[in-house]
Image 1 (cartoon, rainbow, N blue to C red):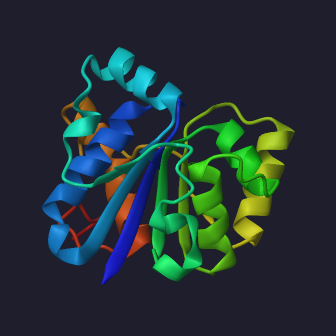
Image 2: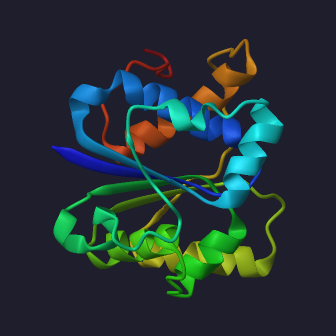
Length: 185
C-alpha cells in the first residue's frame, strides 16, 4: 500500500496544497501512511493566501522541516511517493544540486535514490535558464516536473476547481484512482 509524503514549500499557490490534501483525505483507502512537512514560509504563505491555518487540521502525521528522524528521511521506511506542492524554485534547485539541508530536500533525495516517485508541482513563472536546467536535472534523476498549469476544458467554476485540474493530474501521476474530468469521456 502507498506511503505518501506531501511537502509544502513557501512558493505562492497554497491552494494547490489545500486541494491536494482535501482530495487525499477522500482517497484514504489508497494509502497506508500520509506524512506532511511544511516549510515555515509555507505556513505564512498559506495564512496570507487562504486566510486561515487549516493546514494543521488534516488526518496525517506532521513533521517539522528539520526533523531528520522522520521515517521518509530514510529509504528503509519505504515511502514510495512524494509530492511537493507547491514547489519553490529554491527547493527544486537544492534537490537538483543534491543539497539535503532540510527534511523536504532530504526526503526528495531519498525518493530519487530509491527510484520512487517524486512529483514537483512547480509554481514560479517565467522560468530562467537555471530553473530549466534544474527541472532537467531532476527529470533525468527520475523526478516528474508538473507545472501548476491548470486546464480549462472541464469548465471549472471556482478557484478550487481550477486548482483541482492540476491536483487531479498530480494524483493521476502518483497512481491514485480518482474521479476527475477526462477529455472526451
